[in-house]
Every structure is written in C-alpha cells, then in structure tokens.
Length: 126
Image 1: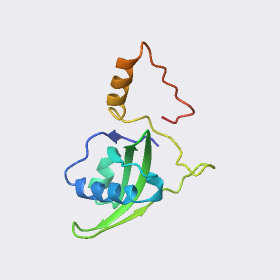
Image 2: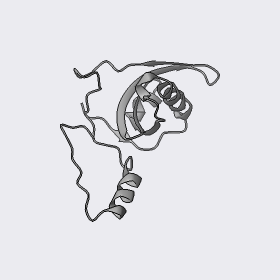
Image 3: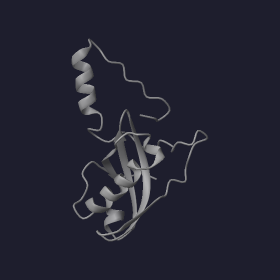
C-alpha cells in the first residue's frame, strides 16, 4: 500500500493531532523527549470522518510513524494507540521515507560544522 505523506496538518485535524501528540509525549514510548507531528499519512482518510490518525512524530534524535484513534470533542479527547505492527524489537516497522524537512535544520547545522557528512540508511529506518 502506498501512503501519501503530507508535511502540513489540515486545520480541521489540528486539534485531534495535538491531542494525539500530547498523549504520546506523556507515554513511556516518548522516553522523556518532546515530539511534534511533522507529517500526516493519508489526510484524506482522516478528513472523511475516520477517527484514525497516522502521524510522523519527531523528537530528540528520532522520527517514528505512529497510528492513533482519536475520538471525542475539543473538550475531551479519547486517544488510543493503534500500532499493531511491531518488529521483534518492539519498534514499528519502517515503511515510509522521512517526511520533507523533518531533519533539515539538523542537517544544515551539522554540515556547517564539518567538511562532509555521511548519512547512513539502514534497512528502511531513518
């Protein structure tokens, strides 16, 4: 299945995305880092009334694709994780390219400090 990744969050989905990010940041999976949503997969599906959100979350030195079911209203959101596809190490499978701009500021900073930078992509993980 090919996913369409958007690096902008539609205004109609922003409150639900913020609720999912807040939930994730308070979970043990955040490991003390503060994550932000840098991408949204299949925004049309979420805009058509689905409670499911597939987000690209970046924080600390990692980015991960996580799925959530977000229901309720602006006053009280109910958030639950939908990540069911885990590798043997307990991490989600990497099946997406990194979203545009997710590491752009990091790369600019590192490139200004060194003569060259080696980027290594290992088995689809980024």
